Structure formats: structure tokens, C-alpha cells
Length: 162
Length: 404
Ligand code: SF4
Image (cartoon, rainbow over all chains, first blue to last red; front, side, top):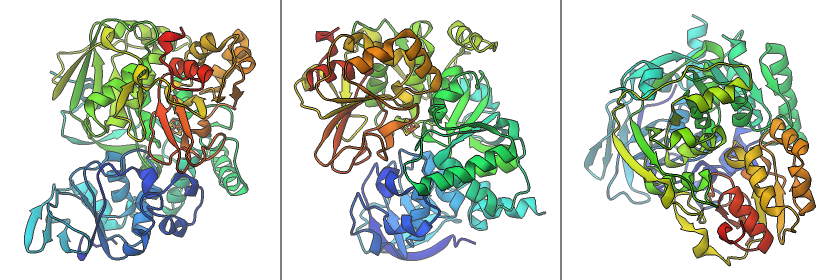
């Protein structure tokens, strides 16, 4: 199960962050998810990883562009990110996040700075920052189902065993 | 008023649909991750093994024992499940799929971002991650949102020394890295009939660099002739007054040789402006430009000369490799001092076979030049095989029109 609403501190990153920067190609060949969490954002800013536990990751436009590596989404979730918020996402990264049970919200959070407290609700489609409320683009019912199951593995497991 | 994507997917833009997948391919990297998810689903079997392809290209042959073990596991799975399996040396997944495994009108899903390459056949081809692929393995289908389409209307002819890659880099620069996010690109106009399959594959390959879901050409005589080589017949498609959300006109006569500069694929400069920039390595290969025709253009320039910087050539597939051997162009490249690697991705993803060192500068025929991708602290430029070969001779970025 993935929680579709919550509260956390903002960690802000820039626009056009590609998945090579989230997790570098040299760490992909393993089954050990911890490796990805340990090296997340290493080539962007090694100081980021320790701040991700319980964080709301706030990115600029085109978040997650580039390679289809699902390890990027897994790395963020394993590192403790609660939700990723960006005005736009690269579509494969967007799908990957949903498929591994990491909530994503399409929303432009103007005036957001590192450390600010953010409250969010994926199902109702809103984000609150310092008393200001922003609305996000709604997810399709299918995406909500997959997210709520905790990811596509649990989603299909549930359906196949029925 | 229907775009090719709407026609193939059978629904208007913006609709969420579930569709049967005609071809579902993965490589050694995403394939093993898909298998891990598949195992977690507790799934008894594949819904449609004959639609599943697994192609080893990313770390091929394996670079260390950890990779080798993961590859062994996926190899065993592939044989056991009777899917189409292509072991090391077969080539890059997109190129292998383009060699007679994709037909116009099909829905093709690859666990790799450059799966959009196969839209060159008039198929709806797009990339997904590992879990999505595992979902397709167990169900035979996937969900998609039918995309809006940006149309590129092409006219004129390429001038000497200018290539399809220059057109690709130029259209990406026009759209920007996220200029077509969630959209499809369609290439139409009077010039499309003159674009060979290799050029179409290069153009569609780069669609994802503008964020696009896929790039598409309408299947025509060129497509039919190409597929005929594999004893396949193809129905031709024609534009039906498609409704584009955006139209861009490009006159091929206006294009010149360009490079994408570090570290943005959407920022280009003419090779002439960059001329004289010193380089440490040249790489000719990848799913963008490692096809036989690419190697042949490079060989035409390098034949009888010597490269001044280390130059790595990696054929995109075994078929390209064999043909280059038979026609003798591979010998020309080797004699010119090039190092030839086995078919696959080579150093493209910065994991083996030509990783760059800190501060080094390279010229590559690949499709993305993200920071650190080909080596930490290195920088690299993207260009056509012709520009790459001309620059290899001088050891610095060179406008190929000075050489050809
Ligand atoms: S050649 Fe490069 S871009 Fe193409 S599939 Fe391989 S790693 Fe990806």
C-alpha cells in the first residue's frame, strides 16, 4: 500500500533533471535496491541523498527525462521520498513512479524553497505550501488503482490471483 | 482529421485506452528488472510469449561477474519461456527489431526510452520501464494515453555533407528538450519519400529527446521495399488531413552540419562555428547512427587516411557488422586506425568499452549528451557520422564540408 496523502519537508531540485542524474548508469546492474538509494543524485549533488527521508521532492519542468531506467524511481522511493511534484514530467519516468508506488503530482509550486513544509493529497489533487493551496492535474482511475495497490507488481498479483 | 497515432490506437487524442501489444521487447538491463517484477507478481506464465523479445545490447558481452550472473538468469528465463532471444553480439535492441520484426500499424512497446525509433515503420512505438514491461508479459496488453501530435512538414533536399542526424539535432533544437512531452511527432511533407529507412530510424530515434512519446513516418514504398528484404509485405499508409496541435516547417536545403554542445541535446551550434575545438575521442555507433550506411559514410571519409584521436566504431547490429565486413568498409575503418567493438550499445551509456576520463572531450554520434553519461567529468558533443569521421582525421571538431 502506498499512502496517497501526507506531509513532508521540501527538497528542491532544478528543471530537466534526467534519470542518469538520479541514478548513474554505473550502479544499475544489481538487484540490491539499497545501492540505488545510497547513490541517488550522486552526480547532481552528493549532499541531497541524506535529506530525502520523509521529503517532498520538488522539481522543475521535464522531471525524469532521458533513460527509461526504473531504478531512478525506485532509488527515490527507497531513499525515503514521499511524493515527487513537478510542473511536467517525462512520461516514462511518470509511469515508472506510479508503477513502483511512488506518488507523482503535476503541479507548479511557485515560491517553494528547501525545507518548507508541504502537505499534499494525490487523490483530491492539491498541494499546500505555507498556507497557499495549489491544485494538481488529476490522475486517471487506473493510475490511482496502481498507486493504491503499492505498484504494478501488487496490482497484477491481486488481479491474477482472483 | 486523424493523426497516425489516433488511427493506429483507434481512439482520439487524450483518451486512455487498453491495447494488446504486438511486440514487447527488453534488453539485458531492463529485461532482468522486468523479470524481478514479474517474479514478484507471482505470475504463472507469459500471456503471449511469441510477442516477447529479449535482446542483449547494453553490457554485451558482460563487463563483470555481477552483470554476467544477471544475464545468465535472464538468458535461462528467455529459453525456458520460449521468447525471441538475441544473445550478445546480435545488436542494439531497436536495430534488431528494425530488421524485420516490426510492421506498419503495430503497437510496439520497448523497455527502453529509444523505442520510439520503430515509429519509422508507421508503427506506434514507445518506451516504458521495467514494471510496465512485466505487466505486458503477464497480460499481453498495456494502457496508453492517445497523444496529441506535432507535425514536421519537410521540404527540399539535404546538401552535401549534411545528414539525417543534422536534421534530427535541428528539430530537437527547435522543439527543446521538453517541447513535445506527452506528444507524438509525425514527419510528413514532400521530402519524406526521399528519406531512406536508415534516415527515418535516426529521426524517430531522437523523438524522445524532445520528450515525445514516439516519432512516426507513414509507411510508403520506401518502407515496403525495406521490409521486402525480410520477405515481409507492408500496407502503405497515407495522411488523412491529420489535426496537429503544432506544425513546424523545415526546409532541408537550409540545414548545415551541427553539433549538440555539452550537456544539452537541444542546444546546437554549427560544426563550422565549433571548428578547432580539440577532442580526445570519437565514437561512431549507437541506435541513432551505428547502421551500415552510417559506417559507410564514415569509411568513405576515413579510407586511406589516419585518425588523429582514438576512434571507436561499434556497429548497431550483427547484420550491419557482417555487411560492413563483406563490402570491405570495416577494413577501411580499421586501417584508418579505428577500434571496432562488437555490435551493441558500446560506450554510449558510459559503462564500458570507451568510458571517458575527467576533463576529456568526445564527439559522439549518439542521441544524448547528459552530464557524466559517458564518463564522470567528461564532456561530449553529438554529431553525424560524417562530422565525426572528418573530426577524427584532424583531432578537432571539423566542418565535414571541408573534407568531403
Ligand atoms: S545505443 Fe545508447 S541510446 Fe541506444 S539503446 Fe543503447 S544505450 Fe540506449
